[in-house]
Length: 336
Image 1 (cartoon, rainbow, N blue to C red):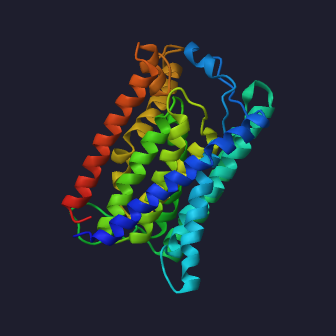
Image 2: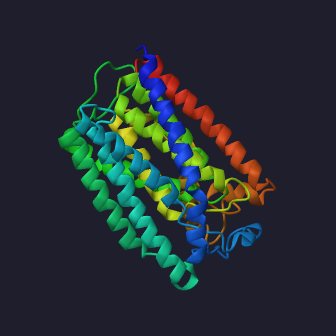
């Protein structure tokens, strides 16, 4: 499939505009967070080098979510003037982003104000994620009627019937929590998420899903704006407000493309981080207290193995970029 210049140019232009808007309001947001003493609480069982980050403003996901919401709603308002810049289908991933950001914000705030830095109870947070994921999955299947499963090499999407909703719910919740686990080093989750959204934005363009591509690149631009303040040494952390919402939204974007089978490849770092935690817990229980990794999630293992924080972030991002390129190549090679 040949991608015409106009959709690609506009998508990239929106990414640039989103970046500028995010950077512009970054400093005022930092002042607000510092005023209300929204400072990060560091896990006492984490690497000692992280103790210096104590008090760094968190809940920075707001810096990403608000520009994305503003631009998406503004583009959707174009139909009033007789122009269509952004299809109303993208209101679903936007709703998921805002909903999961709200869960993350409550969790972040509860953690800041509670003892030991603990946020919402795990069962409560998981129940809310399941509820929002169900609404998203139902909307994807019954209202947007997205391609339920695209398999490389097979020309037509495959219908999954009743199986689609629980499968889509799992993808949204799992991706949300996987990105949340990835958020532990300056710039790591942001770089990984931006790379994954860019990959799916490219896939959407190849499929002719112009509105989905524009939404994905608006998210990319906003994440880049956030990274302006989040790269090492970070002035701001995204918190659960950002990581939960970005992960869930990435899952929805993958589902809207139908190419969610490529998600474990394109988002290989969050998947690896999640698997490392699962293996660590299972090995610990099976061996009566021994550890498979020096610490999980996986990025902490490499930190304790002697890599600097910057080395971990850059090497993980290089792997993510390479896998995202392969994922897009597979989609292109088999007709998107």
